[in-house]
Amino acid sequence: MKISIVTASFNQGEFIAEAIESVVAQKYADVEHIIVDNCSTDRTAKVLARYPHLKVICEKDQGQSDALNKGFKSAKGDIIGWLNADDKYLPGCFDAALEVFSRNLKLDLVYGDYRFVDVKGDLIQVRKEIGFDLFLLKYLPWLYIPTASAFLKRKVFDEGNFLDINYHYVMDYEYFMRLAGRGYKFGHIPKVMADFRRHEKTKSRQTARGKAEMEKALLVHDELYRKFQSPWRDLARYFLMLVARAKRTYLKLFCGAYLK
Image (spheres, one colour):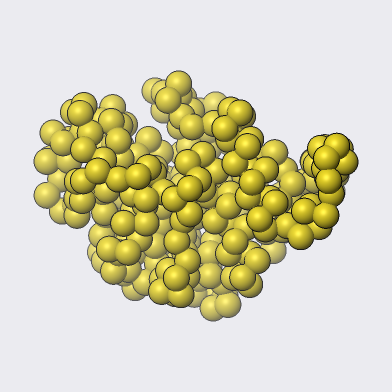
């Protein structure tokens, strides 16, 4: 089974070699790694030149979502992963994803646990996740499905599902809500599969723009939330967020982190 990994890149020359090496380290025979670079002006081009096996698309784009879509459309794999240029896979990541897909043929997307690391790659926190829950996906103030450990079947893209290029901060949040709303099946893998790097250039959902995009996506994809009008909508969002936090805590403490 062929695996395609898509990485959008713009001036991430400091980190991108680690991302590439983490794909190589999987030692998986049938893999392609597609780099979509927005004409970086740092040392990215020199780094990429060291890896002749890469498929590099170097051209101007309309942002990260647009770049990723170019990679997804170019991908030939049966399974497709989305690895940011400053993140990396951990050993056994591909094997874990393929094993879960082979055991449950109904799954369309799988995601694993992950680690937060700092700019040097030193561990900050291990984040063990829970089974898929649409309520938590919608109302937690952060996305609990990490793109760095997420893998999708090719059919998701063959059926016309791509990122919305109008989202620049929470394109993953909007995308996963849209997929869930269309009936695609998500599965959790109880294994730490990737490193998510925190540094000063990391896009954050805590910015005003990120929060505004989350609000926009929720209004698009949640019929219940759309029924509330201001000022009740803000109160409803706050209440639903508190309930989501409480539910997540309950599931982790009393049901275990690894729900099927």
